[in-house]
Amino acid sequence: MPKTFLQVTDSSFPALVEDGSMHAPVLVDVWAPHCAPCRALEPWLNTLQLSMPNLTIVKLNAEAEVALAQRWQIKQLPTLLLFVGGELQARAAGVITGKQLQEFMASVLMPTQINATDSLNAPALLAELEQLIVSEQFEVLAQKIATLPDAVTRAPAFQLLIARVNARQFKPEPNDIHQHLAASIQNARRLAAGEDYCQAIEILLAIEATPDEREIIANALLPILDTMPDRRRAHQYRRLWLQR
Image 1 (cartoon, helix red, strand yellow):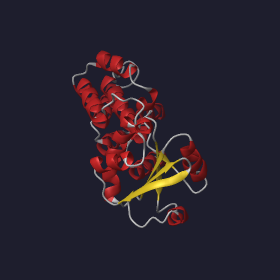
Image 2: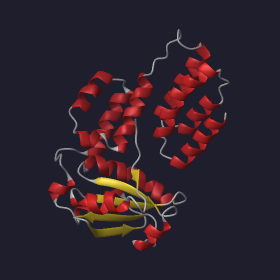
Image 3: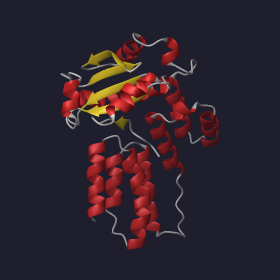
């Protein structure tokens, strides 16, 4: 199931960040739901995770964890905090491009800390896998995935890509569910595969379902909600579903 970066809190920060960085570098992305530059940084963090499998990336919501943000003197969003060896080694604040992010990491980390897979080019890899999905070469795709390190396949960007693969391969069984329900679910999954999450979810929420059909819809809806990058919107949709 696709995953977003782990959110840290005041209680989990010491173990996940300070203690965790004793074993591998930890990058803390300090963000807030209203922050547009924070959202713009997300794809670069996904790419960074793929290209630096040894790196742990976590997110700190400055609005939800005010005391923690103040402790680390957060004055601008987004702010990146890089911890190595249990200590804060570097910080960067404001709008950050992909190139600047790479330079920021390289300014602190040794090459062996940056990349455990020296030949991996994350943007090229994602483009290659994307092309295999579009052309529906799923056997070739599976062979390619089997050669990748576990640290790469656990990255959020890669997990999202796998979700799109699953959506494209989805084949409803007319004997198991009504034909109109099967068509709606298939349409919703294909929209989600194209990252049109809101439209996909609204299709599923609009279905007038029996109790048995509701369980089938939930099996299609919940993975899409888990995949949706906009976590606040996903929680809103989840509440709508539970209230039905």
